Image 1 (cartoon, rainbow, N blue to C red):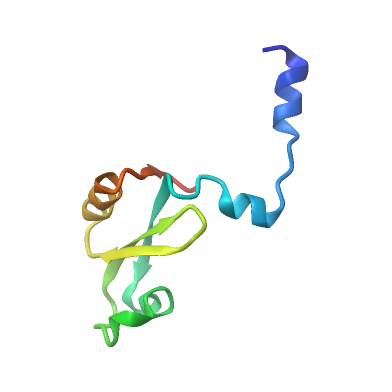
Image 2: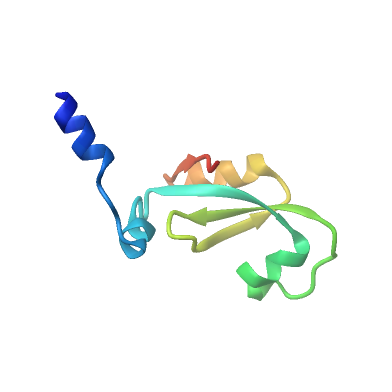
Length: 89
């Protein structure tokens, strides 16, 4: 790969919609979440004790997949469904 090719790749711009679909169905990320915020992502959970540290597994486009009290359980669920987990910084 030439320097020109690397610069071309580095300068690619994606629209927010294109970025949201990047990795769709193959990539997920684990996000720490407080139980107070869980209702917004998982409205079906009903009432939940406030102050809990939980973990949400989200698809690449931000769609909620599962909510758990363990990061390891969230990652295991991703692997079980053939999803590659990535870190967000």
